[in-house]
Length: 290
Image (cartoon, rainbow, N blue to C red; front, side, top):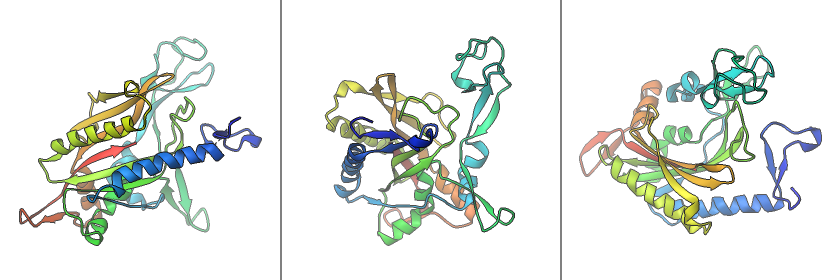
């Protein structure tokens, strides 16, 4: 704060939990990081183009992606001090805040999406959501971008934008926030070639982090043992924060799950005609998300 990097949001009113405003130096630092990423991922390549999709999408987007039904964390609350915790992050025998033993409520699912409304009156409004990730805006625009930019597979779509997650416990300063910025790229490939590109993007992204000059010893890979339902491979690039190694970027092989889900729910074909193979298919996707 003293140097003008970052301030508590709404500070004069007591702030809002885990929201921050970037000051004169903070905003320049943030711009430098985003421009370094964009130059590396878009401007220096001919196989990736950009997109800026809306924060508010049709709620059917989040139905198709599985966010409405399955994007939640298990929540428990201590009956003595009323602090809330993720059930999978605490010892359920003892509260880490007040030390009470066996005083947690049964776990219940806590949806991570912020809900909002569109309409002139509450009675006639529609429930909408602030996006929890920027990736789905890329998937629903896959054909728009492919056709207008005349891209041939393999190719990628990159996006920088705000995302919102109603975290149960948002802590560790700006490491985990409720309003944050993502830099994501979805790379569309032929089915069966996803692991080759998965390895390529792991190497490419780690080289980018190391090029920033912070020190190679501060980075490491971490393979996921339990994969998300849409992935057949997943890896994190972790950074050595003062509180230990934590994820700053995810690299995932998402298979064809996302495009197939949107194709099924929308009734619109999201396929690519490959002139070299003479056939149409739903591409597989390799994601880098920082």
